[in-house]
Image 1: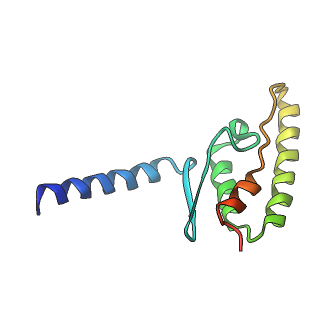
Image 2: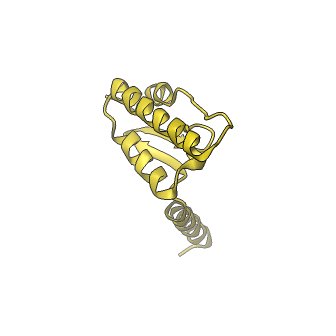
Length: 109
């Protein structure tokens, strides 16, 4: 193997390890689209466990339509507002139009 080829293999392997080590962050790929979730884009992200974040991402990437996305996001937002009230959290909960951004990225049929 050439030195350049070996370096590329190491880089690719390292990137794949990072993606496995941090499943609650990163790009989601659906078809030819890439979309990233992070703490500035999801309502209540800081109040969610790692498992909840993984479940949220799996649900979001499986939604087939913009309308179903809106419905799920509204339910999620209400749940996070309730959780914030239970925990006495007074900071604002982010609410962005993630469904609109997903539609712009071509993630819906």
